Image (cartoon, rainbow, N blue to C red; front, side, top):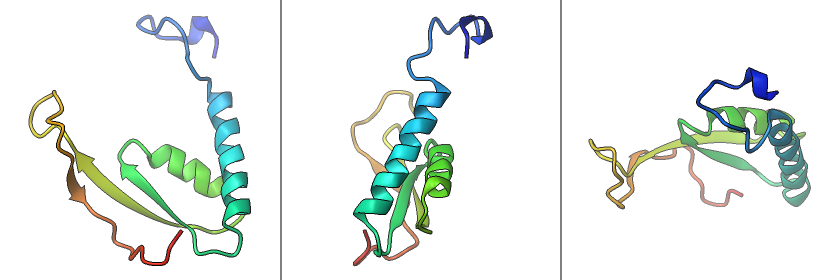
Length: 98
């Protein structure tokens, strides 16, 4: 992405799309190697993790299960209360999972 493509509010890109894609590929390779032959479960936090989790699971040579959590520390305000509430817990039993 060039500076000409950036919205006026964005001064510069900290991490490029290419860098993110490369790191996701590296992580997928590391996870596949570290957990070869194991029952892998990827856990993402909604909603911010959806795209990264999709890219990561596709980049893996294994076929990991995927589950989601939703959490909040804001309540109804815009300032964090410092207390994290679980809004949606995992559906898959994580006992014995990696």
